[in-house]
Image 1 (cartoon, helix red, strand yellow):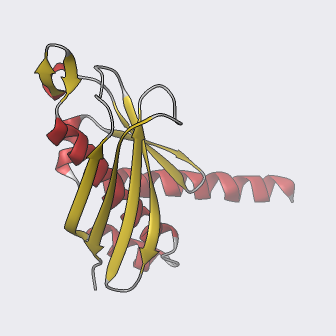
Image 2: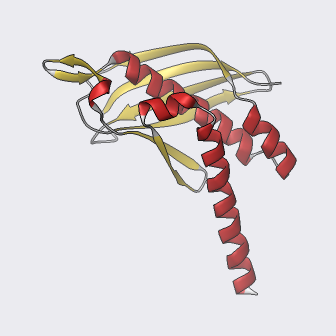
Length: 160
């Protein structure tokens, strides 16, 4: 009995990872930025590994503001889409949700301190999500989670 439960749980985890991979592969900007997502249960952390093309200011070196804003926006969009998949129910609903992504209405990024030439991490929190509209808050950090270097609030149009 326990082996059956363990096998079902493992299959569920593999299925969730596959859905996340399909979701991320549908966003070309994720590949351009070199982003990846780490999943623990239903919680996602986005990772932006440092690459030289992300520098905006060479002296002193700092991440480009546009790259930071894109990192925050993509993190919010993936979180919204991921929630729809997790809450989707049956497999047909999940497939439908993978093909439809939210659209950005507005994003306000706050640059709290320079982003240094090292990996950055971000987590999104859905403040409100209705049938047509969602508000998401994103926080980004580098070495200490308690020391954000950027944050954003985004408003998104949800797919019908």
